[in-house]
Amino acid sequence: MTILVIAEHDNKVLAPATLNTVAAAVKIGGDIHVLVAGQGAGAVAEAAAKIAGVAKVLVADNAAYTHQLPENVAPLVAELGKGYSHILAAATSNGKNILPRVAAQLDVDQISEIISVESADTFKRPIYAGNAIATVQSNAAVKVITVRATGFDPVAAEGGSAAVEAVAAAHDAGTSSFVGEELAKSDRPELTAAKIVVSGGRGMQNGDNFKHLYALADKLGAAVGASRAAVDAGFVPNDMQVGQTGKIVAPQLYIAVGISGAIQHLAGMKDSKVIVAINKDEEAPIFQVADYGLVADLFEAIPEFEKLV
Amino acid sequence: MKVLVAVKRVVDYNVKVRVKADNSGVDLANVKMSMNPFCEIAVEEAVRLKEKGVATEIVVVSIGPSTAQEQLRTALALGADRAILVESAEDLTSLAVAKLLKAVVDKEQPQLVILGKQAIDSDNNQTGQMLAALSGYGQGTFASKVDISGDSVAVTREVDGGAQTVSLKLPAIVTTDLRLNEPRYASLPNIMKAKKKPLEVLTPDALGVSTASTNKTVKVEAPAARSAGIKVKSVAELVEKLKNEAKVI
Image 1 (cartoon, rainbow over the protein chains, first blue to last red):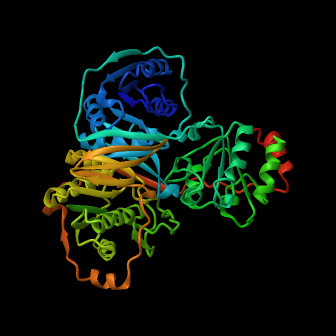
Image 2: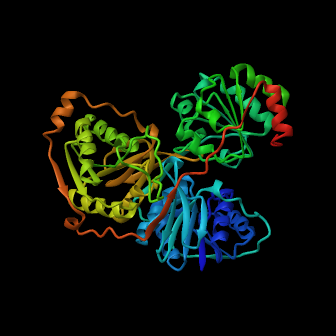
Image 3: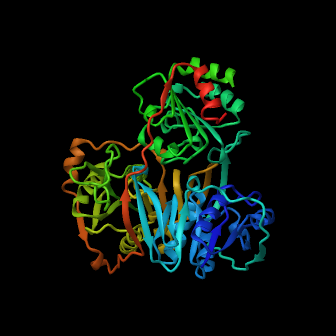
């Protein structure tokens, strides 16, 4: 068995989610190859070659792959992937965009967002916003799988010394082009990789009040997230959303502030190690999953919290 | 131009589903069913394109049981012109659904196909991308803005780090994210009118599509429950517990 893992990157840096995806590949067992499709992504290939447990790194360097357009990357992955037992990608917006296209080209069903590997052909994945867990078995010749990062502890980023090999295949479907992007800039840790996450909900009342959470987060070295209610109300941008339809996080400590705890929010954070809820409504459902609950006015509690840590 | 919208009948998003005692699936008996929320956004976007004079005809399609006619009628009440049901009582995978939609695309030749990014039952997030692959079309997934001009469509996509805009040649596939629009409610007169709009029923056999699957669901279980912890009385107590008991700060 040989497994192909699609590297998540921006041509400069290898994203940490790749390490969780490799961890899932290790659980499946077999040789692990990593594909870096991009342009001028030499540093990414070098980083991929150092990942513990990786045997080979394939580099497809072409202008058509610069922005990870699925119309161009999927045919590449499908062509290379035919010789593999499994193709894995992180369940990031990028992985979700590309991999189903690969599966359809290979005429196999995909298994989305696995959270555990039961055997080389059987996997667990959440359905119904995490209200049920399905065990799915695949008899596909090539098993195409996206991996939910929070289900797997990352492998070591250092320690490997894989061979790096260039692949010549160039695919440019000519049906799509990149126009532009607006990426949020932040000095705080990335939400899905942070050890501590502080999230605000509708109880924050407005976007300006998030400054209290930023102050606390900076003291704790935490990332800042938000519930869908806070995003929909326009308090903060959508890339901060934690939940079934946003980001899935599982930090050591999750602090939910002014969040009631709708099912779809819980689906995005209930695997956190320790959950703290601060809410003035003692009936809020968030308290049913919180390890530590504090019934308080968040505008008094958060500044005090910040002072005490 | 013609717009095709795919919709799915799913458990209503307000229902808290229960896993069956025999672990064969979730209990759908006597549970309220609705149109998948992301599909409602897809219908709304098509209707707005028609109101702007960009779309000339909206065809809505569903793959599912005969009861999915209810969701098709809802889409007709919201502004779709006609409906197609590809009737199947089976639990179809995303690839099978994509193949059936590809057959409908071949038949209808739409310039734009709009789907929800994922169904809230299977949470697969696959069908739109698979349909794009099978059709050889460009795809704009997780769309928060759709702008058609001439023979191309600019789609702004919600991605992990923020937003990305791509330009796709038409025909193209778009899948909707939550913030693309806010779907309207159907008015009573429109609900009445929708009853008279055409609704065609097809079968996978008639479309010549095999719905065979490489995936099998072995079992479905309830997730491990997380038990409630303790209530602390003050911020000071909270910080003390986090430092000394949980040791996370």
